[in-house]
Amino acid sequence: MKSRVLFVSVEIPIVITKTDLEKEFPELLLTTIEKSLVGEISDDKYIFATSFGVITFCNFSHDEIKSFLSRLNIKEAENYQISLINQDYPMIIDEKYQNPLIDTHTIRYEKFNKSVASIISLVLSRSVGLEKREKSLEKKMQESKKLYDTIENIKAKDRKNLMNFASSIAKERFEILNQLFLLDKPDIIWDDFELESLYNQLALQLELKSRFDVVEYKMLFLKESVTFITDRVNQKSSEFLEWIIIWLIAIEILFSTYEYIIKPNL
Image 1: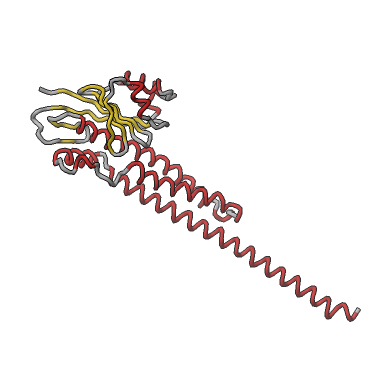
Image 2: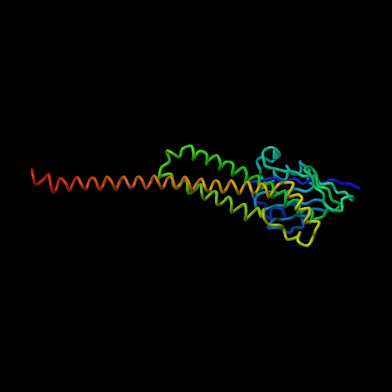
């Protein structure tokens, strides 16, 4: 006998707390996985709230999702499928699939429980969280291009803006590693081959590793760009200081010439 479950991950501009979930779902059974909250609303309905601003709904209708987001005062709640970064993945529960099988459109597996829902929600949440970072880095790439376009006119006074830009890149990388945990496998899969297979297959389908490699490359490029432009600013600053020293020496020579050679002969 087959049944279908839909997982929907949505970015939100706030972090959902334990209090928020307990207030919304009084009968909620709440646990944690990888610093994220897993709420069991019923045997086939779960909610997964991360620490990096992504929430995953398991077996919620789109109207229920809109309603929940509205109660969180998310402005884009009614149009979340267009206005917010989101990703969905259907799961077919079918006894024919004793081992999880995942393609680009569907998860097929005979088991469905809290652990399975948690693993799927975790991977989907990381994918949406990574997409948020990808878009953020794309904006920084555009900023970097503008810096290159104006590099000939860049001045020492621009050093502060460059340092702020460099800090934002470092913060971006820290948050990816410290919040998304893209390089870490959840503890609950270590002793469960099927859960590990589910995690690995879904992570592969969503290209988490390859996308993270691209993000790493972009961050390295941005870091090198800032270093290059900062060196350019420092070079211009040094040249400016050198010219000041040269002019001061020239003025000193002129004063000395006047004082010791020209003035006595007047």
